[in-house]
Length: 489
Image 1 (cartoon, rainbow, N blue to C red):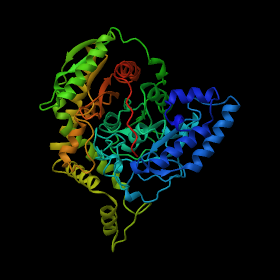
Image 2: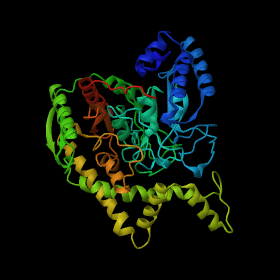
Image 3: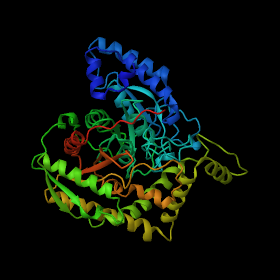
Image 4: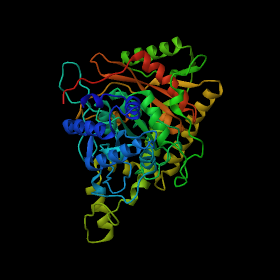
């Protein structure tokens, strides 16, 4: 059964269709792998009974010839997605044992297409973090280790559980969310593929909100093809989400293997940071050479407002978070810490329920929205956001099809490295611009560092042109090969 977990999603789909094995067998193999890998802390809730029931139901459908595009495929679900009758906490104490009576649109579409839920995956509390260490369930451990060392490494965040579970072959793919890099950064640090779709491509309904104008759901998978398969089921218009865009969902998988000959790929000079590690610079050059060898044309481009993206992001995102998190007050659901007055109940509940990073961001957000500072900070950050978006528009107007950049400034670092908050925020330096401009971005494994840890490259695309990213991503994947961690857990 162990062999079943090493299949790609596409291979498992074909095997199920050919009746080489059943969904129940595939599900059982993954449930066994999850049980054996609890030391990674990737899952915060395992749902074996539900998984087996879903698998049996799908097997019956496959036997009748009624299987959907994901029929029988076992997936992990980030704990930010509401799952009907299954605990959903955003990995925060303040939500306690909240069990939603409804299903998020994205997960309901996965179940519609025949997928099987293995359980809920760990993430940074309310998706606020770049290392998956702020979760109330404790940190997630990266299945990768430095060569010859036993130091536990972070998988990146906030979708660290999703990335770790996919890399360790505990699920065939996972849902994730990306507000400033939370799909692409953990994918890069775990040797997996993660795509943040264009803002509005996937419904946000039923996903616990962090920053509503930046959040976007997407998949993490083992290969570019697998992520394209998942993306097709996750995307689509949803009348329940007013930011959801009413456009037909293309067959993303059809873009895999398409020629990239004649495509213009921009290389932005502003991403060459002072003190950037030589191995990241080398990886970037290698990625450019692979695309060139496939027939693409590399051009230098300028995105002059890039240097303002991180500070502007860390004004806008906390501002929206402070508004979104105001609803967690101990009155209607989740944790309640009593007080002598309603004000004290709010204070006690929020002080007890929110972790340090969430409190930090709520306070920053409340400050920048306050009467004396709104114009100086929030309004100015929104103007900078418009300029960042225009940089990309100008670039695409010159015929550039996609932009190639590093995905992260380094490989995975140690759990408990105790980076100060600003150092931690710098992990998002290559990814936040994509969210600020609402664009699609994909992280693809492209190489390893001197300690044999995976490193990723990022491709940024035009709005709603994820297909080009899948085509280009596959070129990098084919050239770099796939990376699998040596099993130690």
